[in-house]
Image (tube, rainbow, N blue to C red):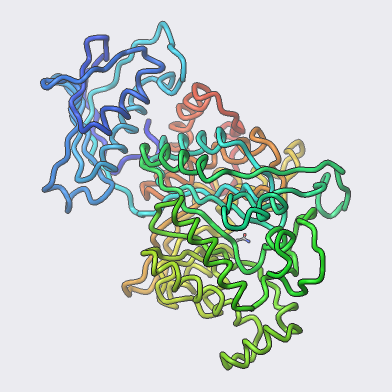
Length: 510
Ligand code: ACM
């Protein structure tokens, strides 16, 4: 009944019951995690003891068998034993153990009347892809840190390891930069927001804003790390930067123009100018980003960058001449290369959207292929590592049903069975060293102003993304059966979700 489905799962007859006498022997981080995740609902203290019933240990010889995230978990008459090559592997064993218990285990308050028993089983498991993520867009609507912690909890529950946090947008800059305080004092606020669909062009005449302090984000990073989840920040440049330019007009096309933080959805023509000082500004921002986020990757965006301002701007034209470029769109590659070089100096590697494939992506950039499935193949062909997140299947802001009654959304149609059916490996992937390294669902925020709306779009499609990323998909009916248990875990966590249609009403992709 696990999601994602383990690579091998051998059930056996018998059950083990956790009681007040149950003890733990594990590395300190794992013992703490077991108590953090199992004690609230059960009320069991799970103290340490050398000859414990739950034994979690590292196995230095298991690298080949289990890799960086695999684990073995055995429940039998002698107790519960988990081994892994890494602490991350043990973290996933903890989550697997949690899913073997009744779904009420996910509750945050003591639950009475439940027998905390788990079936005898032997699991050997490891994921197919090293990056299994979700994008949360806090640029369009600022969301509370408590929601981001819930997303981390949900990711960890699904043995997903990456929260891609989209922190900057035309409509809001959410990352505190100590050197440039106006980024949040000005850029985190807008005067109003669209009402209804963007096409209708009505506004609510209500200011919206908010940002995260560096300390809040550091706490979130630590909370996620304890659960095996890495937070990858995105500072989207050189497009999607209207809020930054509203704060610091010298970053934009015309420093004398007074832009306001964006109040409409859609693609803005506003982009960063190509001045040396603007590049330096961004490097200073990134210095603070890497100080807060220890992740090996920083996402630099690079999507949807209209070349109109650059085509007419004397500084941009001089830059083109200096670089020998004839197409202003190629300035995108220059921008990203400058910042990728800087981040390399910090020991970080960049992720960028697939527009960069044709515009001079640095060779070591990981490409996030979003526009459609062909972009996965194109990025592989160009020699990059690729994270597959095609909007045709994995945009979780798209409608989950085409039936009337769905809450307003941006468009699209990605029902649960379609998400579940996504296979990231294109049929004709070239066999070089480059490869698909990950799968990610993207929850863009324009039409998700509240936590409740975000949760409705995220769940349960996140469960389908998790299984695509773990790479153990079975048939859809089997998934749906396991999903019914997952929904009860969501109930216990107290998080909203969209109730999926009964299996006999699922669409033709099932
Ligand atoms: C994107 O959806 N603009 C990456």
